[in-house]
Length: 264
Image: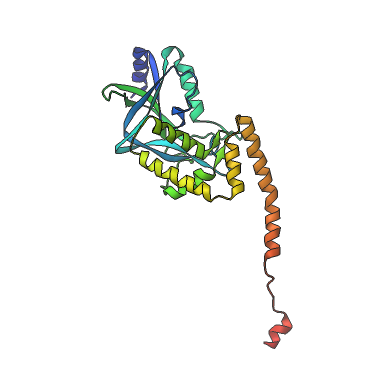
């Protein structure tokens, strides 16, 4: 859909919409006036296709977040987040700011490209054109190689960022889909991934598991940022101790002397 057509469409409708399929379905952004569930985007699939080093990961331990990509014979279930044309500009700005954050080092998490796509309403007849996040395939943060369920589970099971753990992101998203019985071509894989993450978390040492559980209980972003900083400092301090421990635990290697070499 060309830009001029989009502007005219929004003007005539008097509303603007965003198609939500990840965290936006349980944590929408500002200026949303109406939410319509059980909508469908046909010809696309979703998955954990993007690295996240701000919201659910860090630069030291990146997490995974969802994205959309074209896929024949596939469809994605989600919400339409809608607003009136009178606040279209702040609505779009809030959406883009949410989906393309910038970290403290001014690195932009440019994992998405944006497009207006036709979304089927719950009646499966009416079409609403909506602004949608698609995976930016050429982004350095796009997962170019397909990860197995186990590989995804390990990343999601250990990662955390300023919004909480990566596991919480998966839990909240899947829980919302379950409550509303939203089924699409990724639902079965998301269920298997959730089970795999639970298994991975169960196998973590108790100290790490307790820290992640406690981290998700922190109510504010500032508290989470302080916890991340504290954990990073603690790990840096622990490295020299572990190095010394390994050094003293190594069995000394006997180096043959000149006289021993002569006697052989």
